[in-house]
Amino acid sequence: QVQLVESGGGLVQAGGSLRLSCKASGRSFSLNTLAWFRQSPGKEREFVAAISWSGGNQFYHDSVKGRFTISRDNARNTVYLQMNVLKPEDTAVYYCAADSRLEGIPSMVNYRYDYWGQGTQVTVSS
Image (cartoon, rainbow, N blue to C red):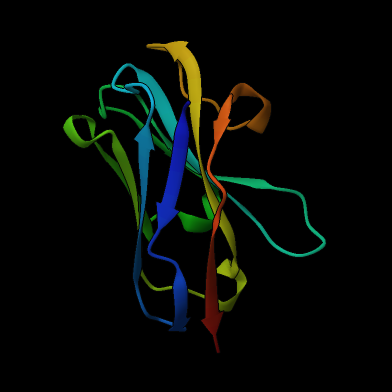
């Protein structure tokens, strides 16, 4: 059974930092794109960042460029999201996702991703 489990969320003041982790189990994702999405109450789930299977290519939503960094450790089957200079508008439930295609081109659309974690809450206070 494939599982993605996020951790690292919490409450932080504006300007602070958090590092999210997402550990996969049940199969290896070393040849798969991994991504982070987020969803705020009343809003659609939106793309945050994605990283190619090799880690050589990263893609970001414009609103987080320069503040967030996605990375991966294939040996640990884990993807990370380092979030710096957090803003109240970053408040959301953050989900990690995995694309089942091997060596696929990273996508910013949620229907490209087949596996999802349960989410971790990030709250940024002003």
